[in-house]
Amino acid sequence: MLSRRVNYFTESVIRDMTRLALKHEAINLAQGFPDFPAPQELKRAAASAIMDDYNQYSITWGAKDLREEISRKSSKYNHIEADPDSEVTVTCGSTEAMMAAMLALINDGDEVVVFEPFYENYGPDAAVSGAVPRFVPLNDDNSIDEEALAAAFNKKTRALILNTPNNPSGKVFSKEELRLIADLCVDYDVIAVTDEIYEYILYDNKKHISIGSFDEMTDRTITISGFSKTYSVTGWRIGYALAEKKLTSALRKVHDFLTVGAPAPLQHACVTALRFPDSYYKELVKMYDGKRKLLYNALTKAGFGCTMPEGAYYILADIPQGAGMDDMDFARHMVSEAGVAAVPGSSFYRSETGKRKLRFTFSKRDETLIEAARRLERAHTAWRN
Image 1 (cartoon, rainbow, N blue to C red):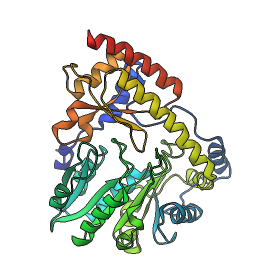
Image 2 (image 1 turned 135 degrees about the vertical axis):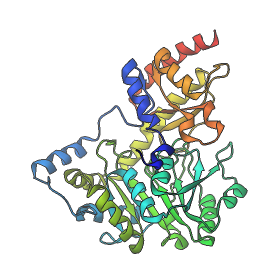
Image 3 (image 1 turned 60 degrees about the vertical axis):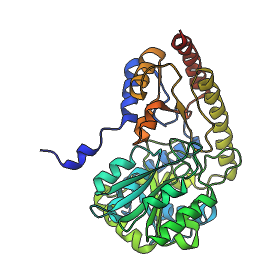
Image 4 (image 1 turned 90 degrees about the vertical axis):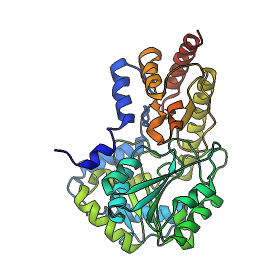
């Protein structure tokens, strides 16, 4: 006998594509982890923390020195003032922070507004917490459909999930769009739960704005981020959530019994990450911008339709015309025949739109992307014939 909630979602398609890539020895452009080393200084800090015996439980909601550094970083970069003792919670990745936030906020039957396309975890998060998701598709140019967004709010709406920069689309929500969202949250007494894990990976002079920095959203936002993407340590699973005291207290109760705490030595290492100079973040963007252009050119040459992402490190692409397959079949075909793995677009959509799309990551070495480009071009010749 199984619980009903597990029938509402499947195992992660992203992780499944990684397993398929390993089976076929394909290049994995499906799962968003780097195949290049993390910063040496950060790795040394982790090794030192272990040797210095930071190997037991830290305080449940995070080591004090890390919470203090997160508070300083959030004030400087996000313009959010968060007390490190009562408004900052360190979690086992941003994924756990999102789940803890949902469990802390939601009662069975509450509705949660989610923009489409969305990161695949948000659907299961809603199911586990008992929420009813209300999906709001973005326009073809990734702008907000204001009428559709307003129509999604009602007296049952409890929360809105906002991911900016967005995975999978690469959209960066503008200040004007965030104002629109904030107004609706205030009008309907809704909490915004924001996933800002890609906050430093921005292109073409785009700026990251945290909706939690708006005066009217200070007490109604849970701001989530982490270290996985910015510092190329996706396996460390260190994230955090910022929220006013009452929200933080509720979130910490869930976090405590959900995971107890994040890995102690890695928390201490992350203090080092937050002390990196501004030049680190500039070089990070420069590196990813080059990879973005490399993959974009490879995909367009191979017949995929796509636009340049504004942030994060993914490209959401239309399947080449004439392929004659939906996203699931074409993704599997690409792994076995082209030797390149991507994620079927339906993982990110509830509508039929996703069946025409694949998501590729460019968080890989240039050599990896160049070889993927070669394989895609060779496969494109076969597709045309």
